[in-house]
Length: 80
Length: 267
Image 1 (tube, each protein chain N blue to C red):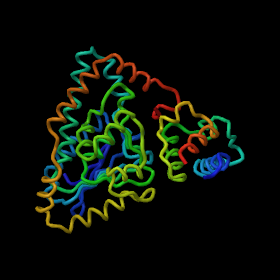
Image 2 (image 1 turned 135 degrees about the vertical axis):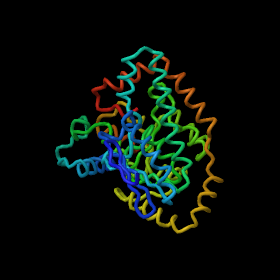
Image 3 (image 1 turned 120 degrees about the vertical axis):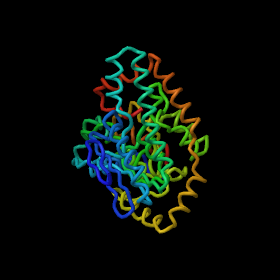
Protein backbone atom coordinates (compact mmCIF):
# COMPACT_ATOMS: atom_id res chain seq x y z
CA UNK A 1 0.00 0.00 0.00
CA UNK A 2 1.46 3.40 -0.92
CA UNK A 3 2.18 6.00 1.76
CA UNK A 4 -0.19 8.94 2.27
CA UNK A 5 2.50 11.23 0.83
CA UNK A 6 2.62 9.16 -2.34
CA UNK A 7 -1.17 9.19 -2.53
CA UNK A 8 -1.15 12.96 -2.10
CA UNK A 9 1.47 13.29 -4.82
CA UNK A 10 -0.64 11.25 -7.24
CA UNK A 11 -3.73 13.33 -6.47
CA UNK A 12 -1.86 16.56 -7.13
CA UNK A 13 -0.47 15.22 -10.41
CA UNK A 14 -3.87 14.00 -11.56
CA UNK A 15 -5.60 17.27 -10.62
CA UNK A 16 -2.92 19.39 -12.29
CA UNK A 17 -3.06 17.35 -15.50
CA UNK A 18 -6.82 17.18 -15.76
CA UNK A 19 -7.60 20.77 -14.86
CA UNK A 20 -4.53 22.12 -16.68
CA UNK A 21 -3.02 23.90 -13.69
CA UNK A 22 0.79 23.91 -13.18
CA UNK A 23 1.65 21.23 -10.64
CA UNK A 24 3.95 23.57 -8.71
CA UNK A 25 1.05 25.97 -8.11
CA UNK A 26 -0.91 23.35 -6.17
CA UNK A 27 -0.37 23.67 -2.43
CA UNK A 28 -1.43 20.48 -0.58
CA UNK A 29 -3.02 22.54 2.19
CA UNK A 30 -4.76 25.18 0.09
CA UNK A 31 -8.42 25.23 -0.87
CA UNK A 32 -8.62 23.06 -3.97
CA UNK A 33 -11.85 24.62 -5.20
CA UNK A 34 -10.03 27.95 -5.51
CA UNK A 35 -6.71 26.46 -6.62
CA UNK A 36 -8.31 24.52 -9.46
CA UNK A 37 -11.12 26.99 -10.12
CA UNK A 38 -13.73 24.26 -10.00
CA UNK A 39 -17.37 23.98 -8.99
CA UNK A 40 -19.21 21.03 -7.46
CA UNK A 41 -19.88 19.29 -10.76
CA UNK A 42 -16.20 19.45 -11.62
CA UNK A 43 -15.39 18.20 -8.12
CA UNK A 44 -17.51 15.15 -8.81
CA UNK A 45 -15.59 14.72 -12.05
CA UNK A 46 -12.34 14.82 -10.05
CA UNK A 47 -13.76 12.35 -7.53
CA UNK A 48 -14.64 9.93 -10.35
CA UNK A 49 -11.13 10.18 -11.79
CA UNK A 50 -9.58 9.60 -8.36
CA UNK A 51 -11.81 6.58 -7.73
CA UNK A 52 -10.75 5.04 -11.05
CA UNK A 53 -7.07 5.87 -10.49
CA UNK A 54 -6.91 4.42 -6.98
CA UNK A 55 -9.51 1.67 -7.58
CA UNK A 56 -11.53 2.77 -4.57
CA UNK A 57 -15.09 3.83 -3.91
CA UNK A 58 -15.29 7.07 -1.96
CA UNK A 59 -18.79 8.13 -0.91
CA UNK A 60 -19.17 11.79 -1.78
CA UNK A 61 -20.54 12.60 1.68
CA UNK A 62 -17.01 11.88 2.94
CA UNK A 63 -16.02 15.06 1.11
CA UNK A 64 -18.16 17.22 3.39
CA UNK A 65 -15.92 19.90 4.79
CA UNK A 66 -12.92 18.65 2.78
CA UNK A 67 -11.36 21.54 0.94
CA UNK A 68 -7.66 20.71 0.77
CA UNK A 69 -5.70 18.02 -1.07
CA UNK A 70 -3.98 16.67 2.03
CA UNK A 71 -7.26 15.86 3.78
CA UNK A 72 -8.58 14.38 0.55
CA UNK A 73 -5.51 12.15 0.38
CA UNK A 74 -6.27 10.93 3.89
CA UNK A 75 -9.82 10.01 2.87
CA UNK A 76 -8.55 8.02 -0.11
CA UNK A 77 -5.77 6.41 1.93
CA UNK A 78 -8.39 5.10 4.35
CA UNK A 79 -9.96 3.17 1.46
CA UNK A 80 -6.78 1.58 0.04
CA UNK B 1 -42.56 13.48 -37.34
CA UNK B 2 -39.29 11.70 -37.96
CA UNK B 3 -37.06 14.64 -37.24
CA UNK B 4 -37.32 17.53 -34.81
CA UNK B 5 -34.99 20.14 -33.43
CA UNK B 6 -36.22 21.81 -30.28
CA UNK B 7 -34.72 24.07 -27.65
CA UNK B 8 -34.27 21.34 -25.07
CA UNK B 9 -34.06 18.22 -27.21
CA UNK B 10 -33.98 16.91 -30.75
CA UNK B 11 -34.69 13.61 -32.38
CA UNK B 12 -34.15 11.83 -35.64
CA UNK B 13 -35.21 8.45 -37.01
CA UNK B 14 -32.56 6.97 -39.24
CA UNK B 15 -32.24 3.40 -40.52
CA UNK B 16 -34.54 1.98 -37.86
CA UNK B 17 -32.93 3.77 -34.92
CA UNK B 18 -34.46 6.78 -33.17
CA UNK B 19 -31.91 9.02 -31.52
CA UNK B 20 -33.17 11.45 -28.88
CA UNK B 21 -30.57 14.02 -27.94
CA UNK B 22 -30.88 16.27 -24.88
CA UNK B 23 -29.24 19.69 -25.12
CA UNK B 24 -30.69 22.23 -22.71
CA UNK B 25 -27.93 24.12 -20.91
CA UNK B 26 -26.59 24.03 -18.29
CA UNK B 27 -27.12 20.29 -17.74
CA UNK B 28 -30.48 19.21 -19.23
CA UNK B 29 -32.43 20.11 -16.10
CA UNK B 30 -35.98 18.78 -16.50
CA UNK B 31 -38.39 21.68 -16.32
CA UNK B 32 -41.48 22.78 -18.17
CA UNK B 33 -39.76 23.50 -21.51
CA UNK B 34 -38.14 20.07 -21.59
CA UNK B 35 -41.39 18.41 -20.52
CA UNK B 36 -43.31 20.15 -23.31
CA UNK B 37 -40.79 18.85 -25.83
CA UNK B 38 -40.72 15.39 -24.24
CA UNK B 39 -44.49 15.25 -24.69
CA UNK B 40 -44.04 16.17 -28.35
CA UNK B 41 -41.49 13.35 -28.60
CA UNK B 42 -43.87 10.91 -26.93
CA UNK B 43 -46.58 11.82 -29.45
CA UNK B 44 -44.17 11.36 -32.37
CA UNK B 45 -42.88 8.11 -30.88
CA UNK B 46 -46.30 6.47 -31.27
CA UNK B 47 -45.77 6.57 -35.03
CA UNK B 48 -41.96 6.35 -35.22
CA UNK B 49 -41.81 3.15 -33.17
CA UNK B 50 -43.68 1.33 -35.96
CA UNK B 51 -40.69 1.97 -38.20
CA UNK B 52 -37.87 1.55 -35.68
CA UNK B 53 -36.30 -1.23 -33.67
CA UNK B 54 -34.30 0.91 -31.24
CA UNK B 55 -34.30 4.21 -29.37
CA UNK B 56 -31.08 5.74 -28.04
CA UNK B 57 -31.30 8.60 -25.56
CA UNK B 58 -28.18 10.66 -24.88
CA UNK B 59 -27.00 14.14 -24.02
CA UNK B 60 -25.15 16.45 -26.37
CA UNK B 61 -23.86 18.50 -23.44
CA UNK B 62 -20.41 18.03 -21.96
CA UNK B 63 -21.51 18.26 -18.32
CA UNK B 64 -23.41 15.00 -18.44
CA UNK B 65 -26.63 13.19 -19.24
CA UNK B 66 -28.96 15.16 -17.00
CA UNK B 67 -28.62 16.82 -13.59
CA UNK B 68 -32.26 16.17 -12.67
CA UNK B 69 -35.33 18.29 -12.15
CA UNK B 70 -35.12 22.04 -12.72
CA UNK B 71 -35.11 22.97 -9.04
CA UNK B 72 -34.85 26.68 -9.73
CA UNK B 73 -38.00 26.64 -11.81
CA UNK B 74 -39.76 24.45 -9.23
CA UNK B 75 -38.85 26.82 -6.40
CA UNK B 76 -39.57 30.05 -8.26
CA UNK B 77 -42.96 28.86 -9.52
CA UNK B 78 -44.00 27.50 -6.14
CA UNK B 79 -43.09 30.82 -4.52
CA UNK B 80 -45.24 32.72 -7.01
CA UNK B 81 -48.47 30.95 -5.99
CA UNK B 82 -50.30 29.85 -2.86
CA UNK B 83 -49.57 26.45 -1.37
CA UNK B 84 -52.61 24.68 -2.78
CA UNK B 85 -51.91 25.97 -6.29
CA UNK B 86 -48.26 25.02 -6.01
CA UNK B 87 -49.13 21.48 -4.92
CA UNK B 88 -51.57 21.12 -7.77
CA UNK B 89 -48.90 22.33 -10.17
CA UNK B 90 -46.41 19.81 -8.82
CA UNK B 91 -48.89 16.93 -9.13
CA UNK B 92 -49.78 17.98 -12.63
CA UNK B 93 -46.10 18.08 -13.63
CA UNK B 94 -45.47 14.66 -12.11
CA UNK B 95 -48.43 13.09 -13.85
CA UNK B 96 -47.35 14.52 -17.18
CA UNK B 97 -43.76 13.37 -16.87
CA UNK B 98 -44.86 9.95 -15.66
CA UNK B 99 -46.98 9.57 -18.80
CA UNK B 100 -43.97 10.29 -20.99
CA UNK B 101 -41.57 8.09 -19.04
CA UNK B 102 -44.05 5.22 -18.87
CA UNK B 103 -44.40 5.41 -22.64
CA UNK B 104 -40.64 5.19 -23.11
CA UNK B 105 -40.41 2.40 -20.51
CA UNK B 106 -42.96 0.25 -22.33
CA UNK B 107 -42.15 1.26 -25.90
CA UNK B 108 -42.22 -1.66 -28.37
CA UNK B 109 -38.58 -1.27 -29.35
CA UNK B 110 -35.32 -1.68 -27.49
CA UNK B 111 -34.26 1.43 -25.63
CA UNK B 112 -30.76 2.41 -24.63
CA UNK B 113 -29.62 5.30 -22.42
CA UNK B 114 -26.08 6.28 -23.41
CA UNK B 115 -24.88 8.27 -20.42
CA UNK B 116 -21.86 10.26 -19.38
CA UNK B 117 -21.12 12.67 -16.55
CA UNK B 118 -23.84 13.75 -14.15
CA UNK B 119 -26.84 11.40 -14.26
CA UNK B 120 -28.68 12.62 -11.18
CA UNK B 121 -32.22 12.56 -9.88
CA UNK B 122 -34.69 12.95 -12.75
CA UNK B 123 -31.88 12.27 -15.19
CA UNK B 124 -31.18 8.96 -13.47
CA UNK B 125 -34.92 8.27 -13.60
CA UNK B 126 -34.99 8.93 -17.34
CA UNK B 127 -32.09 6.50 -17.85
CA UNK B 128 -33.91 3.87 -15.76
CA UNK B 129 -36.82 3.84 -18.21
CA UNK B 130 -34.50 2.34 -20.82
CA UNK B 131 -33.89 -1.38 -21.37
CA UNK B 132 -30.14 -0.89 -21.19
CA UNK B 133 -27.82 1.75 -19.77
CA UNK B 134 -24.43 2.12 -21.41
CA UNK B 135 -22.18 4.45 -19.45
CA UNK B 136 -18.87 6.01 -20.21
CA UNK B 137 -16.43 5.74 -17.32
CA UNK B 138 -17.02 9.33 -16.23
CA UNK B 139 -20.74 8.80 -15.66
CA UNK B 140 -21.90 9.36 -12.12
CA UNK B 141 -25.30 8.38 -10.76
CA UNK B 142 -27.21 9.69 -7.78
CA UNK B 143 -30.61 10.05 -6.14
CA UNK B 144 -30.03 13.23 -4.12
CA UNK B 145 -33.69 13.90 -3.39
CA UNK B 146 -33.52 13.09 0.33
CA UNK B 147 -31.13 16.03 0.69
CA UNK B 148 -34.14 18.22 -0.17
CA UNK B 149 -36.61 16.37 2.01
CA UNK B 150 -38.10 14.58 -0.98
CA UNK B 151 -37.99 11.21 -2.67
CA UNK B 152 -37.44 10.65 -6.40
CA UNK B 153 -40.71 11.59 -8.07
CA UNK B 154 -40.28 10.60 -11.70
CA UNK B 155 -40.59 6.85 -11.16
CA UNK B 156 -37.10 6.20 -9.88
CA UNK B 157 -37.87 4.07 -6.86
CA UNK B 158 -40.24 1.58 -8.52
CA UNK B 159 -37.87 1.22 -11.47
CA UNK B 160 -34.81 0.83 -9.29
CA UNK B 161 -36.64 -1.81 -7.25
CA UNK B 162 -37.54 -3.56 -10.48
CA UNK B 163 -33.89 -3.72 -11.53
CA UNK B 164 -31.85 -4.07 -8.34
CA UNK B 165 -31.83 -5.78 -4.96
CA UNK B 166 -33.55 -3.93 -2.12
CA UNK B 167 -30.34 -3.51 -0.09
CA UNK B 168 -28.73 -1.61 -2.95
CA UNK B 169 -31.84 0.55 -3.40
CA UNK B 170 -31.79 1.40 0.32
CA UNK B 171 -28.10 2.34 0.13
CA UNK B 172 -28.58 4.66 -2.84
CA UNK B 173 -31.78 6.25 -1.66
CA UNK B 174 -31.10 6.64 2.07
CA UNK B 175 -27.50 7.88 1.74
CA UNK B 176 -28.17 10.03 -1.31
CA UNK B 177 -24.60 9.35 -2.37
CA UNK B 178 -23.34 9.42 -5.92
CA UNK B 179 -21.50 6.48 -7.43
CA UNK B 180 -19.48 5.87 -10.55
CA UNK B 181 -20.06 3.72 -13.64
CA UNK B 182 -17.86 0.87 -12.39
CA UNK B 183 -19.95 0.57 -9.25
CA UNK B 184 -23.11 0.90 -11.34
CA UNK B 185 -22.02 -2.03 -13.46
CA UNK B 186 -21.04 -4.10 -10.40
CA UNK B 187 -24.54 -3.75 -8.97
CA UNK B 188 -26.16 -4.63 -12.28
CA UNK B 189 -27.46 -1.20 -13.23
CA UNK B 190 -25.22 -0.56 -16.21
CA UNK B 191 -24.70 -3.14 -18.93
CA UNK B 192 -21.49 -1.72 -20.44
CA UNK B 193 -18.83 0.73 -19.27
CA UNK B 194 -16.85 2.32 -22.07
CA UNK B 195 -14.11 4.90 -22.47
CA UNK B 196 -14.86 8.57 -22.02
CA UNK B 197 -16.90 9.84 -24.95
CA UNK B 198 -17.69 6.38 -26.34
CA UNK B 199 -21.16 5.74 -24.92
CA UNK B 200 -23.16 6.81 -27.97
CA UNK B 201 -20.94 4.83 -30.34
CA UNK B 202 -21.34 1.74 -28.16
CA UNK B 203 -25.10 2.31 -27.99
CA UNK B 204 -25.31 2.47 -31.79
CA UNK B 205 -23.36 -0.79 -32.11
CA UNK B 206 -25.65 -2.43 -29.53
CA UNK B 207 -28.75 -1.12 -31.31
CA UNK B 208 -27.44 -2.53 -34.59
CA UNK B 209 -26.97 -5.93 -32.93
CA UNK B 210 -30.47 -5.87 -31.45
CA UNK B 211 -31.86 -4.85 -34.84
CA UNK B 212 -30.83 -8.20 -36.30
CA UNK B 213 -33.51 -10.07 -34.35
CA UNK B 214 -37.15 -10.55 -35.30
CA UNK B 215 -38.90 -7.38 -34.15
CA UNK B 216 -42.09 -9.06 -32.95
CA UNK B 217 -40.14 -11.57 -30.86
CA UNK B 218 -38.10 -8.79 -29.24
CA UNK B 219 -41.28 -6.90 -28.35
CA UNK B 220 -42.90 -9.99 -26.82
CA UNK B 221 -39.72 -10.82 -24.88
CA UNK B 222 -39.45 -7.29 -23.54
CA UNK B 223 -43.08 -7.22 -22.37
CA UNK B 224 -42.53 -10.55 -20.60
CA UNK B 225 -39.37 -9.55 -18.72
CA UNK B 226 -40.00 -5.88 -18.04
CA UNK B 227 -43.23 -5.20 -16.17
CA UNK B 228 -44.28 -1.59 -15.62
CA UNK B 229 -44.83 -1.14 -11.84
CA UNK B 230 -47.96 0.98 -12.38
CA UNK B 231 -49.38 0.89 -8.87
CA UNK B 232 -46.08 1.82 -7.26
CA UNK B 233 -45.54 4.59 -9.79
CA UNK B 234 -48.89 6.11 -8.84
CA UNK B 235 -48.09 5.71 -5.13
CA UNK B 236 -44.75 7.45 -5.65
CA UNK B 237 -46.54 10.53 -6.99
CA UNK B 238 -48.79 10.58 -3.91
CA UNK B 239 -45.86 10.26 -1.51
CA UNK B 240 -43.88 12.95 -3.33
CA UNK B 241 -46.81 15.38 -3.12
CA UNK B 242 -47.33 14.64 0.59
CA UNK B 243 -43.65 15.39 1.25
CA UNK B 244 -43.60 18.48 -0.95
CA UNK B 245 -46.20 20.13 1.28
CA UNK B 246 -43.76 20.19 4.20
CA UNK B 247 -41.85 23.39 5.15
CA UNK B 248 -38.54 21.48 5.17
CA UNK B 249 -38.80 21.05 1.41
CA UNK B 250 -39.30 24.73 0.76
CA UNK B 251 -36.29 25.43 2.97
CA UNK B 252 -34.19 22.82 1.15
CA UNK B 253 -35.11 24.19 -2.26
CA UNK B 254 -34.45 27.76 -1.15
CA UNK B 255 -31.03 26.77 0.13
CA UNK B 256 -30.14 25.02 -3.14
CA UNK B 257 -31.40 27.82 -5.35
CA UNK B 258 -29.84 30.67 -3.36
CA UNK B 259 -26.54 28.91 -2.73
CA UNK B 260 -23.43 30.72 -3.79
CA UNK B 261 -21.26 27.90 -2.49
CA UNK B 262 -19.19 25.84 -4.83
CA UNK B 263 -20.75 22.69 -3.47
CA UNK B 264 -24.50 22.58 -4.29
CA UNK B 265 -24.15 19.19 -5.97
CA UNK B 266 -22.14 17.73 -3.12
CA UNK B 267 -23.93 16.32 -0.07
